[in-house]
Image (cartoon, rainbow, N blue to C red):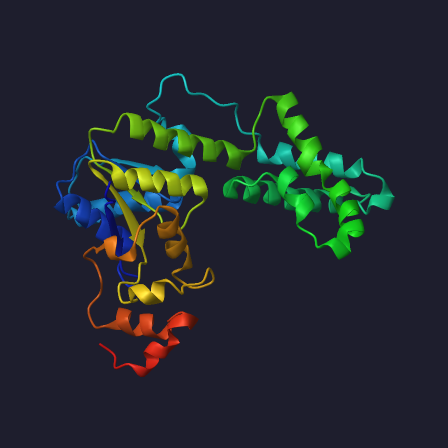
Length: 300
């Protein structure tokens, strides 16, 4: 099944361009636009008003990806998950677990230090859940053999997040927020695969976790779906895309395209780029290391 993927160039005014494109293609108010952040979702409403010359109009449903639960999009009846644990309570419980560790383990013995470390543990949990990594399975094999003894002591301390914390979540009947969001996103993608929505669905993403990539792929396959990449460099040759590193400005988009099995050639350039050739100049200045030989070629 082909993927429908569009992209705005880095120099495009993204949200105004998105609003104008939606209106130009029919402006269906029963449609849905999924954006990566709440701030972008709020700003898109103003962009629609500006694109419509300040005149009132019926807007499509605009949802921030992080608020997908609040939006109530799920099409599969009966799907439910435990609530997410409140951030402050999570940090407090993690701090208590840290303070329960003996001093010889290297654990902080005073609340301010334990509180700060608990925040770091919370970040670690979120990053692992976003990436779909099981810490209990992944951590033991991270250290080389020569550091095995020291790493075992570290692993013993990290049982706070690999063993004690999952037990607390189960006892309290809650979930880590990032894990819950990932499951909701995957459930929504599956629901759309089984019962595609009647109206258009556009999703904006420039990078993504495994769950976001699965939803992006599903949206791109929907009959009226479209994945939109903001900041996509249309001047970068396909061969150069193969050498894009994670740290490159296009790294997130390159990973997302790879995750959904899409080729750069499938991406449709959308209107909205500013005139003057600044995009081509910027693209040339930011060539990935593997494509630096292109500097010797005449600019086009």
